[in-house]
Amino acid sequence: MTEDAIIIGGGFAGLSAAMQLARARRRITILDTGLPRNRFAARSHGFLAQDGRPGGDILADARRQLAAYETVTFRDAPAERLEGERDAFSVVTGDGARIDARRVLLATGFEDHLPDIPGLSERWGKTVLHCPYCHGYEVGGGPVGVLARTSDAARFAAVVADWGDVTLFTNAVPEPDERDLAVLEARNVKLRPGRVTAVTDGPGGMLAVETGPGIPTLVKALFVSPEALVRSDIPRDRGLELKETPIGSILHTDDTGQTSLPGLYAAGDIARGAANIALASANGVKTAVFLHHSLIWS
Image 1 (cartoon, rainbow, N blue to C red):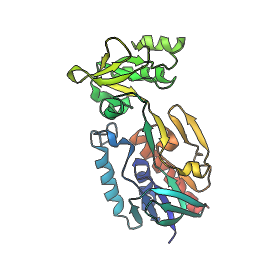
Image 2: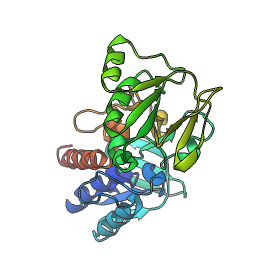
Image 3: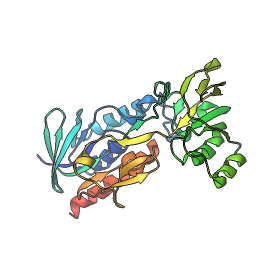
């Protein structure tokens, strides 16, 4: 039987999209591998009415609610390949199944790639963080660091300064220009030049950020914008149009969420670039509504 839509990715964007289509009584299959992008963080913050809950618990509740809709099918398998075209797609899964659908929605999210610095990845989601809106309040003020990866680091550091006393580790990235330096000075952001060589545990639960010979800089948390890579081979295999952003390449979509391949939609981080549960969920809702309309006005 041909599904109305296959949703690839069971995170916040994918499940929010699924809810809209399920309530329209559309037949959908959700493919998921159970590895959400925020799995490294113990708790989610800043999501209205869910503040402080583990992200996995929120997703589990969503799956239970969706399972009550008789037109929804879950498959715990990755999507290996997308074949066909609008109204006649086929998705081949990692467990060997082939599922036909009129539409497909990609909501796989990103895989974060951190700079290759000893000690960084082991602390990811704990004291090495990406989003001050998600985790900055819990840091509790005091000394915090921002690790530069691109030239946008100065703007990021100026924002993080609302959550603590910031040191910007330039990490061999070109230093800020005069305009950015003026903003950083006004925000009391200190610059620490040189390449970061390691991140280790310091006294009293602090992080010790090493920048070569000398005394390491102690911070309570280190914020970094990792390089984000789309967690799917489908965009490459189908030659989808991409858009470059400061965090990496995202999928180019039109105002309805449709990619450069007609009938294939994208939602969440890979379509927006911003990593935030509320934004991903809202984008999933919006894209699903347009996808539903396309099933009627095809």
